[in-house]
Every structure is written in structure tokens, then in C-alpha cells.
Image (cartoon, rainbow, N blue to C red; front, side):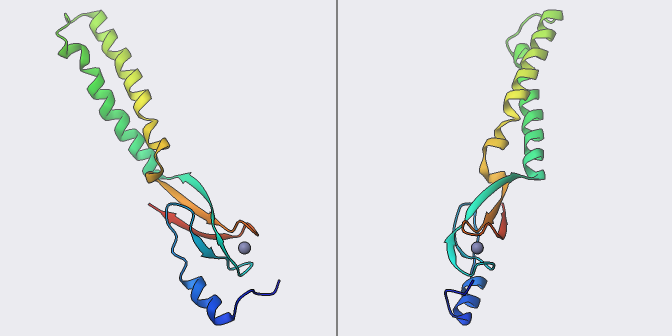
Length: 121
Ligand SMILES: [Zn+2]
């Protein structure tokens, strides 16, 4: 495929690819044209660590709810605290997986599918 721009302009535009958390205009090194990139989001270690942290914190908070309600300490209160703990921890640990802020973003050329770069939050 013949380049659609001069080599000097191509060099400047290739070097000026500034990737971000969303699709951007970028120059593809493979087909040497500028396109709006196609993006794919991927969970990172940061996402999993945030999920674990939120799970533990919300679990501890929700575990203490029956005791703040001044329920009589007994088997039922402990069982209720355990159930609230499991539900609270399970529901809250999903939050980071719905936030794009903790994911890496990989940019691809929509024309040829070539990898352009990765943006890591
Ligand atoms: Zn391309």
C-alpha cells in the first residue's frame, strides 16, 4: 500500500500519537493513515486490588451493622452479620470492574487492525 502522506509528515504524525482513555485520532504505522482508533479495555492488577480493598472495607462495615442496631448478641445476630457481610462484600467488589478508570486501554487501527499503543491509567 502506498502511503497517503509525505514521509516527513508521516514521521511527525506518528510521533505525535497521544493516546488516552478513549478513542483518539492517531496515525497507524502499518497502513500509514490517520484514523479514529478502535479501543479495547482490559482489567489490570490495579482493578483486582481495588476490588479486593473495596470488598474487605465494605464487608467489615456491613458486618458491624447488626451490632450497631443493638441486637442481642447471639447466634442469630452473628449469623445475620455474616450474611450481611457476604452480601455486602460480594456486591461491592464488582464496582471496579464497571469503572473504566482502573483499566488499561489498547488502541487499534480500525482499517487494518494493527496495534497502535496502550494507555494505562
Ligand atoms: Zn492501519
